[in-house]
Image: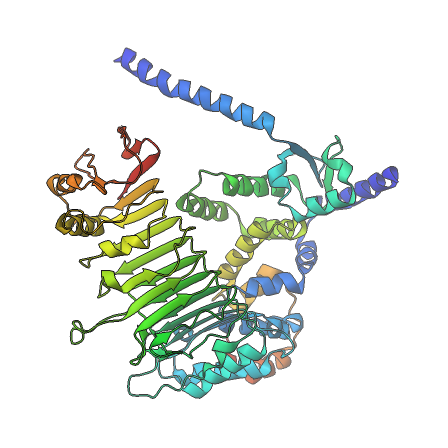
Length: 410
Length: 184
């Protein structure tokens, strides 16, 4: 057995050696034609569908190859006119091999693409078991919302990224997406399912990562309940914007019911305030937290972050927190104690400086000590939970203390 | 002056020595597999890297004894020149301290150092070895190279014999005008 194998191996090596020595262009061609259709399709997968379709002219072998592509990229930037783009999209859909699934679809049409075409593409994607879908849409303000919501009940979808730059797109009450793992929504509006509460994510049983950018609530709703037992990472990016007109009466709330959350990021430069984020469970698995904001009164948010091990703040947010703390009446309202905190990272915003004095002032608070370490005009704060003794060492801009690391990110 | 340079020199030397010692220790600890390329060159490769090669995994599934014995695992369709490159790529991407930017710079340099022939040979090797990450990197790079190129360039690149007659080709271009089939 062994011997036979070796001989065979040697023979193949001999053949290969001959090949390597006398490799002329004809042989080179033969070797490259060894590339299976699968490999060629893999190359085409990385091309805009317009270029992939154009390979049909190369030779008869390539004529129908593109029709088996499982990844489709339709991007307006490769077309000079909306007519050409629309014609191209519908031709691809009707010419491709309809027995082959569309696993990845990236659809970025012209702003004025008719809803009819958009809905046709969505319907095609749902029918061809789309798994990853990225759409950029922008309906003009004067056009009614004609987006067919069938994509929000697609059983095969695992990743959905919806970028909407038009007026808020109204979502159905529940997202019936049983396979969905990653979801990004930009500028959508949530519809209440029960009284004034919207709870769109509880039906996505496999949801792992959720990003909401600039989202809003339907006018009848007051609360967005993010309820999902599987969710691990949540990013709220300027979600819930009050306009200057409704700033005083703005009452919208986000309530978390996400027992398995391990990472929470809040980026907010608009209108969220401390009373508007809460959690119905203790988020005991929360490891990483990050807050970047310019808003006042955010100390209440920390309640949600009680269990974090790593907290990232920018210097502006730290200043706001310190300011909030200094205004707290002694002992009547207890600021939360971040008992598990191991690492605090402060992102320095060059144009926002906190004076050492400001940092030191907050040292008087017993529950939330902020100790400043000053070196090379850098300063940072430290929120201490259960650590009493502090050992300070300066190591190339990194500050290591007992059981906790503080780093300054420039 | 001379003394100063001496003293500054000894310091990094020492650290380099220590680093080297550290490396030696880790190398001792890591198990290795013996791979033999088509041109009869044997390589001792860290098991953690070699096991990323689908072809090696498959070989060991059939003959598990090869992992412990001194027998080399034959890679029939990979020459030493390609394997060296593949190992360079995987060692860099496996390096724990490599940041995103380091990897990006490395990838760019790696690609720049390859001519088209070497790139295609490497693609064949990566396809044979079934190494996903490198295969994706190469196919993506090739897609970037052929995009926007004229039809003859792409034919030459892939070694395609144009088996359309001029009439057929003209008719086909006409038929697919909607796709903007021009390839300029």
